[in-house]
Image (cartoon, rainbow, N blue to C red; front, side, top):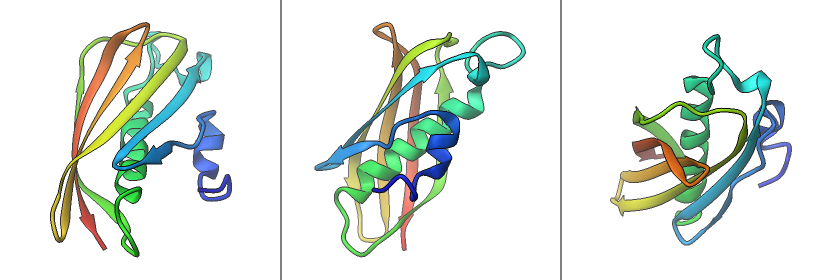
Length: 122
Protein backbone atom coordinates (compact mmCIF):
# COMPACT_ATOMS: atom_id res chain seq x y z
CA UNK A 1 0.00 0.00 0.00
CA UNK A 2 1.28 3.45 -0.83
CA UNK A 3 1.47 6.52 1.38
CA UNK A 4 -1.25 8.10 -0.77
CA UNK A 5 -3.60 5.24 0.06
CA UNK A 6 -2.96 5.83 3.76
CA UNK A 7 -2.81 9.63 3.93
CA UNK A 8 -5.10 9.45 6.99
CA UNK A 9 -2.53 7.29 8.76
CA UNK A 10 0.12 9.89 7.99
CA UNK A 11 -2.16 12.55 9.47
CA UNK A 12 -2.36 10.69 12.78
CA UNK A 13 1.34 9.77 12.72
CA UNK A 14 0.96 6.01 12.16
CA UNK A 15 2.93 3.80 9.81
CA UNK A 16 1.17 1.78 7.13
CA UNK A 17 0.42 -1.75 8.33
CA UNK A 18 2.71 -4.56 7.24
CA UNK A 19 0.59 -7.55 6.25
CA UNK A 20 1.05 -11.06 4.95
CA UNK A 21 -0.82 -14.37 5.13
CA UNK A 22 -3.78 -13.01 7.12
CA UNK A 23 -1.69 -11.21 9.75
CA UNK A 24 -0.88 -7.51 10.02
CA UNK A 25 1.10 -5.22 12.30
CA UNK A 26 0.97 -1.44 12.67
CA UNK A 27 3.03 0.79 14.96
CA UNK A 28 2.43 4.25 16.35
CA UNK A 29 4.46 6.34 18.74
CA UNK A 30 1.60 7.99 20.65
CA UNK A 31 2.18 11.55 21.83
CA UNK A 32 0.19 14.44 23.29
CA UNK A 33 -1.92 14.93 20.14
CA UNK A 34 -3.34 11.40 20.64
CA UNK A 35 -4.59 12.00 24.18
CA UNK A 36 -8.08 12.73 25.45
CA UNK A 37 -8.96 15.25 28.18
CA UNK A 38 -8.14 12.64 30.85
CA UNK A 39 -4.56 12.43 29.54
CA UNK A 40 -4.90 8.90 28.12
CA UNK A 41 -4.91 7.71 24.50
CA UNK A 42 -8.20 8.60 22.83
CA UNK A 43 -10.50 5.60 22.34
CA UNK A 44 -11.41 6.73 18.84
CA UNK A 45 -7.76 6.59 17.84
CA UNK A 46 -7.45 3.06 19.23
CA UNK A 47 -10.58 1.98 17.32
CA UNK A 48 -9.14 3.48 14.13
CA UNK A 49 -5.87 1.61 14.60
CA UNK A 50 -7.50 -1.80 15.09
CA UNK A 51 -9.93 -1.26 12.21
CA UNK A 52 -7.11 -0.24 9.86
CA UNK A 53 -4.87 -3.13 10.89
CA UNK A 54 -7.65 -5.70 10.53
CA UNK A 55 -8.43 -4.35 7.07
CA UNK A 56 -4.80 -4.83 6.07
CA UNK A 57 -4.80 -8.40 7.41
CA UNK A 58 -7.88 -9.20 5.34
CA UNK A 59 -6.44 -7.58 2.22
CA UNK A 60 -3.44 -9.89 2.52
CA UNK A 61 -5.64 -12.95 1.88
CA UNK A 62 -8.19 -11.75 -0.69
CA UNK A 63 -7.96 -11.08 -4.40
CA UNK A 64 -10.04 -8.46 -6.20
CA UNK A 65 -12.19 -7.90 -3.11
CA UNK A 66 -12.35 -5.03 -0.68
CA UNK A 67 -13.23 -5.49 3.00
CA UNK A 68 -15.87 -3.17 4.44
CA UNK A 69 -16.24 -3.31 8.22
CA UNK A 70 -19.83 -4.24 9.04
CA UNK A 71 -19.39 -4.80 12.77
CA UNK A 72 -16.61 -3.71 15.11
CA UNK A 73 -16.46 -4.53 18.81
CA UNK A 74 -13.71 -2.78 20.74
CA UNK A 75 -13.03 -3.76 24.34
CA UNK A 76 -10.87 -1.24 26.19
CA UNK A 77 -8.87 -3.12 28.82
CA UNK A 78 -6.67 -0.37 30.29
CA UNK A 79 -5.78 3.24 29.46
CA UNK A 80 -2.83 4.00 27.24
CA UNK A 81 -0.23 6.73 27.68
CA UNK A 82 2.22 8.46 25.37
CA UNK A 83 4.74 6.01 23.94
CA UNK A 84 5.00 3.17 21.42
CA UNK A 85 1.90 1.15 20.51
CA UNK A 86 1.90 -2.11 18.57
CA UNK A 87 -1.29 -3.20 16.84
CA UNK A 88 -1.63 -6.76 15.57
CA UNK A 89 -4.46 -8.36 13.64
CA UNK A 90 -5.24 -11.89 12.49
CA UNK A 91 -7.90 -13.19 10.14
CA UNK A 92 -9.77 -15.86 12.13
CA UNK A 93 -12.36 -17.04 9.57
CA UNK A 94 -12.87 -16.27 5.93
CA UNK A 95 -16.23 -17.05 4.44
CA UNK A 96 -17.55 -16.45 0.94
CA UNK A 97 -18.96 -13.00 1.80
CA UNK A 98 -17.83 -12.27 5.35
CA UNK A 99 -14.51 -12.37 7.16
CA UNK A 100 -13.91 -12.36 10.92
CA UNK A 101 -10.75 -10.73 12.22
CA UNK A 102 -9.29 -10.21 15.69
CA UNK A 103 -6.91 -7.48 16.86
CA UNK A 104 -4.91 -6.34 19.90
CA UNK A 105 -3.21 -3.08 20.86
CA UNK A 106 -0.24 -3.51 23.18
CA UNK A 107 1.90 -1.03 25.07
CA UNK A 108 4.77 -1.95 27.39
CA UNK A 109 3.90 -5.65 27.01
CA UNK A 110 0.32 -5.14 28.21
CA UNK A 111 -2.88 -5.32 26.19
CA UNK A 112 -4.82 -2.04 26.01
CA UNK A 113 -7.49 -3.15 23.56
CA UNK A 114 -9.01 -6.34 22.20
CA UNK A 115 -11.16 -6.01 19.09
CA UNK A 116 -13.25 -8.29 16.92
CA UNK A 117 -14.63 -7.31 13.52
CA UNK A 118 -16.80 -8.78 10.83
CA UNK A 119 -16.10 -7.42 7.37
CA UNK A 120 -18.14 -7.81 4.22
CA UNK A 121 -16.14 -8.61 1.11
CA UNK A 122 -17.21 -6.41 -1.78
